[in-house]
Length: 315
Ligand SMILES: [Zn+2]
Image (tube, rainbow, N blue to C red):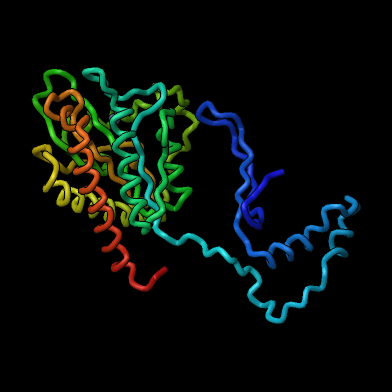
């Protein structure tokens, strides 16, 4: 029995398998309805004290409600949320700390950044924002992609702050990555490799992943997705130029697993290198974070504004 603030009906009920160390869950999605709709649905279900007889009784209970215009049957009182969905993906989490240096962990830095970004964007009210993790839990890479696809996300933004092994030169500043089978340079390739190792850290059985389907339809969708991903990456670069110190080659690509949704434009932002002293000072600074969150939010806004114009009157 649930106590609700108003009339509601069960919009969806489904079970989720155990995942990420969580037990199996039964999910009930409730939807607000007005009094009269509630009464109608009650009548259909049957009175609470009705005998749980054979199925036929449920039909006989249905009252002949005098509805004149019964044509548009699924009349919802609550308009479905048609705002574009943005998925923010804070890298690592749980047993996967990501990079660690000077007592700071990448997983915490990127979660703080992502939470601030979510709050900033939600304030505009223009987008529905979903986080792949909102706390310190491990989420496999494939699961992150699945969340974006399941929500039919219009944009997926993964947030990281990594390190280069010693002796890799003094790389510093923010870098923006898109997906490519061929890495744009050795540094990008090494980074993608280390990011893709996250699943191994979390004990995810990689053989369970479905083989990639070489389908021409997927290929076509991917082409469009890639175009949007690249467009967002360029917008992001422009916006971040004003506030964030950038890597000398700020736009790169490599085979990041987390960017592989064929139908969701996806970009990975390396905010900076935890292993670089100047970068780390920025990463832990409230002022830097606020400024950078502002730039990313601006880029997201610009991306969607352009996308809506491009989509024209299409839904
Ligand atoms: Zn990372």
